[in-house]
Image 1: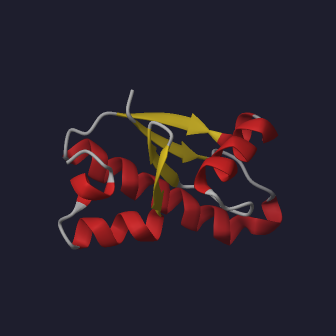
Image 2: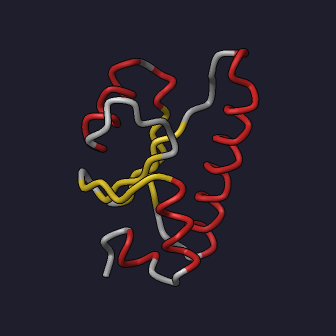
Image 3: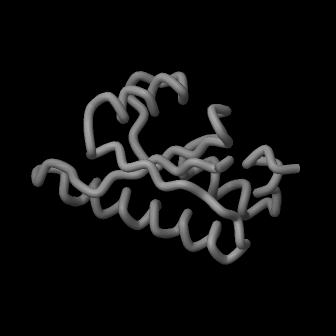
Amino acid sequence: MGIKLYYTTVTASRETLLFLQVKAQQAEMMRVLDSKSIQYELIDISVGGEVRDEMRKKAGNPTAVPPQIFNEDQYCGNYEMFSNAVEEDKLEQFLKLA
């Protein structure tokens, strides 16, 4: 499958506010992709450190946090970049589908 959305299901309790923001961002990205009938694969980084490290390596950022989105192994961007592409009506270009 082409589009891969790296997300998380758990976080440390001391980061509750950040976690709620991340969850809202993830939900928004999924809602937009679903509304545009764009198929995607969810990859949960909370299953193990190696998955998180893979996401960070592919993103080229050792401190990247989810959500991060890719087309296969090509990095597309984070939530802010995704949101900007939606606002500018350039989502397909952002996701490297056009």
